Amino acid sequence: MSLESPNGRKYVPTAFARENSWVLMYHSVDTYEEDPNLLTVRPDRFARQIDWLRRRGLRGVGMSELLRARAQGRAGSLVGLTFDDGYTDFTRHVLPILDELGFSATVYVVAGLIGGHNVWDAGAPRKDLLTAEQVRSLADAGVEIGSHGFHHVRLPGLGDAELTTETALSRELLEEITRHPVNSFCYPYGAVDAAAVSAVRTAGYDHACAIDHSPLTDRWSLPRCYVGDSDGGWRLRAKRARHLMRDHHLATASRRGAGGLRTGTVDLPVPGYKPLSEGPSPARSTAARSPA
Ligand SMILES: [Zn+2]
Image 1 (cartoon, rainbow, N blue to C red):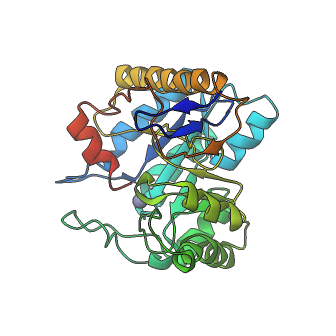
Image 2 (spheres, rainbow, N blue to C red):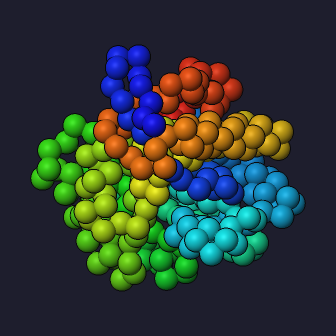
């Protein structure tokens, strides 16, 4: 059975086993004076957040490890840790904490801006992006390097050649730099549509991260949970519960669909599915997530 949107377009949401698939989305971990886009978590806060996971018997891992474990039915205690944009502060403030606990992560690097700055974040403080040497060093240390595109642009609306640059060319360049396979992609701004998914799959990625739950949610549009500097233990607990509830909404919609096969239009909200705020308020949430 397909579902019908208010404007009469029909689609069937994807089937997706979502159990134990909590994936956290970070950007920068550093001290700061101003952070208008709420993308930075202070190092002491980050340490407490990671310790919160540890105390609950959870272990943070990169996306490929998480998905491999899920395929083998052993992901119950794993949480995906992702760091968008590839800021140099990862090496100073994140890696030592992860190493100490035996955690890992996926860092999504903007292939065409390696060694540069977050030039796409107009009005936000400049932050240094990892150099090629740092990216290679992280990969050699066991941190998964994924692609965050070539120019940090939204994929929906791009032409075929531009999509190829953002997906295939960025992968090629990062594999040259890391000398490791690059199998994970992350959509800039979490912006994804069917053409973007198709380009990512054609480029050979194993999976891709988005932000929101949507009818596109599957292995190539994995939802993630924004974590900010104000997130202490009770807020993380609430966010995890909300994430699971969204999984439940989609799983329920999928069960009502035709065996979980994706057909027709996929860029519509699930009827009856009301997205919940990820952050402290809708405005804050939007601001925080838009520069992903
Ligand atoms: Zn980003």
